[in-house]
Length: 72
Image 1 (cartoon, rainbow, N blue to C red):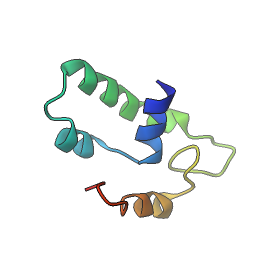
Image 2 (cartoon, one colour):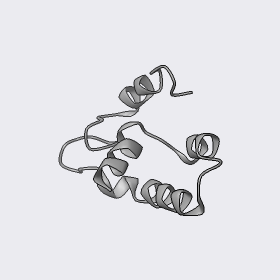
Image 3 (tube, rainbow, N blue to C red):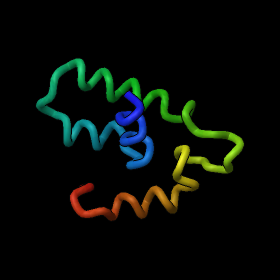
């Protein structure tokens, strides 16, 4: 579960990405991912200064991740 949280958080995945890439998976998989997306903000460490995810400081850094080949 920790690995799934880290994937969602650090790749800054959203519901649109999940819809496009998990379309043929099980209902359970969609429920898991949607739950992870819903809880994403609760996993941000308020004391680190990060605003996007525990290891990703800001939206600019998150945008750079989306440039990784294969992201979309």
